[in-house]
Amino acid sequence: MWRSWASRCVRRTVEVRAYADRIVVRCEGEVVADHRRFFGRDRTLYDPWHYLTVLATKPGALRNVTAFQGWQMPPALARLRRKLGSGEEADRRFVRVLAAVLEDGLEPVEAAAREALAAGTVSDDVILNILTRRREPPRR
Image (cartoon, rainbow, N blue to C red; front, side, top):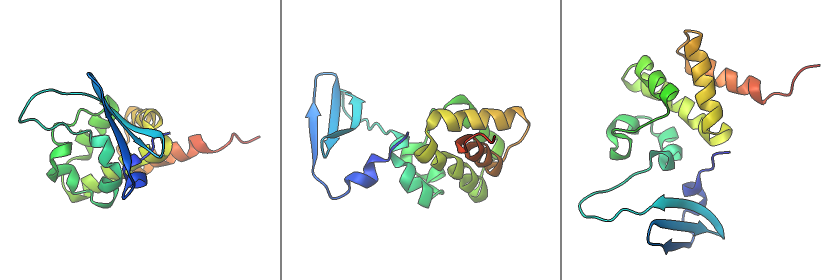
């Protein structure tokens, strides 16, 4: 399951270990970040997935925040984003789908988006419904 480390680590001490090829961050003994190390100047690297909790409360950030510019999303999510269009309402609908990653994980959300797109449906409600149905135990 996808976990939002940022909200759990606010105002807590973290341990940062820098290795030759990566940086590892631990919070309360748990690895909360493990990133490839970059050497160079004048470049900032962002992982947009780290900002999901913020994005859920501020969907407009999808268009306006540097971390989301040029974001390489999984194919079905990128296609869904294009099909939803642009503007505030489209951002809100897309962020509702992205926020499901926090609870369901990336692969199930991507699969639900693929299923909805294959059915010709471009709707956050449909995708969230697919995810809810998959969480329910089978009926007997």
